Length: 389
Image (cartoon, rainbow, N blue to C red; front, top):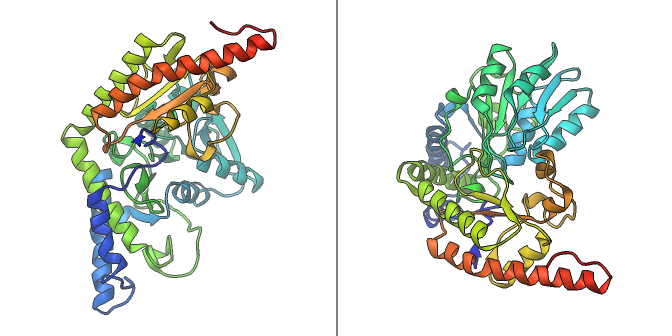
């Protein structure tokens, strides 16, 4: 299988698995216990917290471990606002933010959802203009999961700081692909999840700047200062820590630059070989690994399945929305029509890919598109309508 759906999830790196395995067997202690078994696992938690903090440019004490991106986003929003508060977010956020905002509206909060330009970027000025006297929180993602477009979070962070408003960014799709520095961004809260950068599923972290008045969503024990109680997922935390170390190294050793070159090679070949196609947001700043391409007169789901038959994994977009026939809300927000949106698929590369994966895709893809277009044309002709020849 050639796996090109790394924005959905990534394979666990062998070094990450190696770091995790001891905590399923001999190093099984509860880190809240004072005996040697507990002290040993507590040391692992502290070590991992330091690794996460190094990747994000913050202090270890500012890291809370979570079950992943959804919990981190939910905690950042619900833990910061009260009834009557105003939240600013964007229409292209992940469902973990958008659905939480809908819930908060039912509890008495007010939400403004700003749009994006044709390149898929939030305009900082639209955020500034949306500020009200009761605005308490701004939540804008760092990189979009469907298009890979990087958002101007540094400018938005400055706007939030100048207006004395708390700022959260969902960096799930940015971490490990582009350098992250919470001070440079100017955020008070930042969400990550391990499985997007070769760590295990079910573990993530929320950066909470010191002094940020975050309320816990869970209540019970004293773990993590009571901010996120519950016995820690030690194996997952160890895996997250090692994945952060590998991500930090990957930003230094040219790995992401190599992936970007492969992505560009794919896009250039597709545009040269396949008519009636294009790359969404190609001229926008993007994370290195993501390419969202439309193939007119081809159903995106049909193309994903056709590639799957060739042992190539891609997707139409967010894994949370897979299988839905509706057009992508992200692409629609960019001004892309419904049919073209349904004809778009996302290729997202990862560190476990090799260049020959891209070479094979470039060989297979034109034939798959041609075959599907021929079927569409034949089906339409039998119904008295000619669609594309």
